[in-house]
Length: 432
Ligand SMILES: Cc1cc2nc3c(=O)[nH]c(=O)nc-3n(C[C@H](O)[C@H](O)[C@H](O)COP(=O)(O)OP(=O)(O)OC[C@H]3O[C@@H](n4cnc5c(N)ncnc54)[C@H](O)[C@@H]3O)c2cc1C
Picture 1 (cartoon, helix red, strand yellow):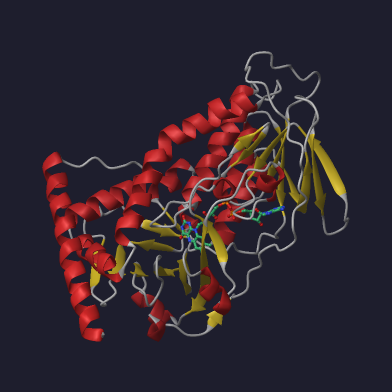
Picture 2: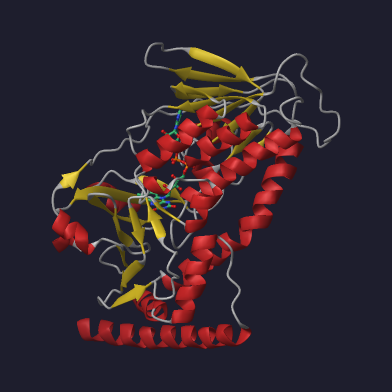
């Protein structure tokens, strides 16, 4: 991988380090869903903290649905979130993302095993199918602008803390700083925390922690000649030499490749070498409290195995925004915790919990050792595996296979695992 890479490009990204203010008193909301007071003479006010895919999608849904919406973002539009920027086909249509924003249409995913066996994934793709590669600054700016066009007010500032309400209908206070003024505050009825893995909103409502993988990524500019090799090709490397429990990637963009890797187990080691960025490993213990809901990375919606989170961020943001609109009857009534649980959490879990569990299982089976990674790459050569994987990834539905092919796959999986474990043990013996 390293041989193909030269000249570092846009390398530094920052992670907030200041500790958020903790709030000890949490409002207990009654279980009753009736008795939602109307808001006389004004619209429901919502603050969305974070202008990534989750926050912008939430803000767009809220503003389009009649809620007075404030979208807070601390970074200027040109600052990219460190991210591979690979998104599934279904997101383009579902979120009306224009094709001119796409840098590359990847139709070939080459996976390298620990012993450097390469398998090309993508043989089963239809002519109109591909993985879209975008730069995050382009995607995020587009989604943010669209939220503004729908009526959301963009506040360029850093949210420093959240004051909780004292009654069931009194406001939350958002405290924030802007370039021109160090102390500002805004009173709102509902808060959506879309402020990423280090979410201050989550801390403010004592939402608990999750385990995080950490990852780093650099953009590396290549000559046109070298970029031609990556025209429609992305690469994945698995093995102890790139990560003990994750994978490394080379994702092509307009004039550069995004190269990265991550780990859950060896965080200390990776931090010694690079500035690393967190990737949630599972949902937070609490995702809704009072009139505050968490979406995207703040909620922990990144799949194991692939580390994919952009689609789930945008989708959860939109679902949560729509849930608030529905429960508030277009911004006319106050909402409560039960509304958010019923209209957002329940719907989300019903739709995606199985996908997340399935990928968790795959990670446990296949990422544990070099031998099982070898087995994974061997299985990736199977056309049935490729079709099922791409259908699930591109369209975000667990693909249904045939019972007979599933049974064959199960036997092949066991066979590959046993064979590769044997080879692994044999190789270890030779090395020792
Ligand atoms: C190295 C790396 C590579 C990845 N590659 C991929 C990939 O190829 N495909 C994929 O699907 N996923 C990938 N992911 C995961 C993906 O980046 C995240 O799941 C996704 O960005 C989550 O979106 P979000 O809107 O929830 O949060 P974020 O994108 O993190 O957005 C949060 C926003 O909130 C803002 N913010 C935070 N705190 C505050 C505050 N206090 N006040 C105001 N604003 C604030 C931030 O500036 C940011 O803009 C990758 C992650 C990493 C770390």
